[in-house]
Amino acid sequence: MRKIIFVTGNKGKFAEVRDILASRGIEVTQNKNGYPEYQEDELEPIAAHGAQYVANKLNVPAMVDDSGIFIKALNGFPGPYSRYVEDNLGNLKVLKLMEEEEDRTAYFKTVIGYCEPGKEPLVFPGVVEGKIAYEERGTGGFGYDPIFEYQGKTFGELGDAEKNKVSHRFRAIDKFLEWIDSQA
Ligand code: ITT
Image (cartoon, rainbow, N blue to C red; front, side, top):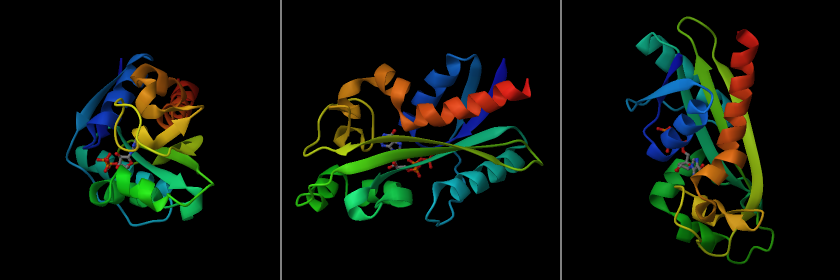
């Protein structure tokens, strides 16, 4: 069985990635020691640098997940700053910022960064399009899930198994798995 270290402090992310990869026979172990996150407008370079840093530091194949929610009416905010905004504003204040906005279009994006020691990092992006709800709905998932609506239900209302079939994270991991299969 292939084993990969996943460096993340976010237990919601870890649980989703573990479940998706377990269904494909890959065992993922969480490492919570973190990595330096560059301030960039794009998630790709953050994930690439992070994966390379941890693979070389731990001397094993390693992955990271850099994610964010991009809201069109706010010019893509909070995007790469989603963690900071979750910690300092939270969903209710994001909804407040969106109060007057009719265009609720938003997308979630995950970039999986993967690297083997001494090699170049690889990145696998995944996106899911949706809308910002008018209030928090549902208790499932984590982070922005209760305010992100996908086909009429928020990710908070969907339940883990359903979210994992359509999410940005699932789509990124699917690309990662395609690459793994192409190496076999
Ligand atoms: P690590 O860097 O340790 O992996 P983090 O939570 O700091 O964990 P990010 O820098 O990628 O991760 O921050 C992404 C933010 O977006 C963070 O606030 C998450 O809670 C949130 N987020 C990421 N994926 C999400 C998802 O699937 N549903 C809801 N919120 C999500």
